[in-house]
Length: 356
Image (cartoon, rainbow, N blue to C red):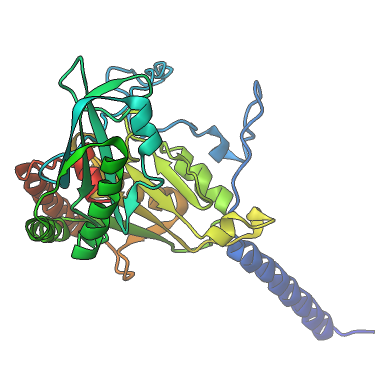
C-alpha cells in the first residue's frame, strides 16, 4: 500500500505532466500561422465562439462620399480610358517627318518597326490626320499630312545616351525611307544634354515609399493576410504574393501595393505557409495627390498592424511611430509641390512615363 506522501507525490507528478502537455500544445498552437476564418454561410449566424466572423468584409477605411454607414456601395462608373501619352517636346527627342502628299495609315502601320523600344527607352510614332490638327497614333483607314516620331529622353533606368540616340536615328531613317518621307533630326549632343538634365531632376524627385509590417507574435498564413487586407479594399494583383489598392479612376496606377513572399503564395498548402512580414508600397510619382496616398498608406499600415498583431517598421526594421510618419508625410508634400512646379504632377501621363 502507498502512504499518503507517496500518493501525494504521484498526484503532483501527474499534474506536472499534464501541465507540460497542455503548455506544449499551447506553444504549438501559438507558433502556427494564423489562418483565414471562413465566411459565415448565407442566411446563417456566426457562432458565439467566433466573433471575428461578424466583421464587415467590405473596405472600411475610405467610404464613398455621400454614402451613409451601412448603405450598399454605389454602382461602379463605366471605365474611361486614360489620355493617350502623346509626344512632348520637353520629354522626347522628336523627329519631324514630312511628305510631298498624303500618307495612308495602312502604309504607316505596314512600315512601323517591329519594336517600340531602343535599349531602355520607348519611342512613339504619331500622325496628324488631314481633317484635324490633333496628333494620334497611326490608324488603318486614316490619311496623314504629317508624321513625327520621338524617343523618351529619360526614365528610371537613366538618361538617353549617344548610342541609343544613334540607333534611334538609324531606325527612324529606315522608316522614313520606306514611306518616302523627309526626316529632320535634332542635334544629338543637345538632346543627350537635355536627357541628362531631365534624368538629374527625376533622380532627385523620385520616391517609392515602403512600410514593412512584422508579426509581433504568431506568424500569419497567406489566407489570413489577404483576408485582413481585403477588408481594407485590397484586391488580388496580377502576380502571386501581390495585392493592390485600386485607384478611384479605372486604368490608373494602384494607390498602394501589398507584397508578400511569392513562395508562400504558391505553396501547395497555403494554410501551413508562415509569413513573418510583408510590405506596403507607395510609388509616389504614379499616384495623384487627390488620392491622399500617404494618408491611406499610413491608415492601412496601422489598421493591419492592429488587427493582425504586428508592428509597422521601415526597411531596416526600425519601428515607425506617429512623429516619424508625420515627418515622412511633410517630406512627401514638398515632393508633390516640386513635381507640380516642374509641370509633372504625380499621376499625370507624362510623369508616369518619366518615372517608369
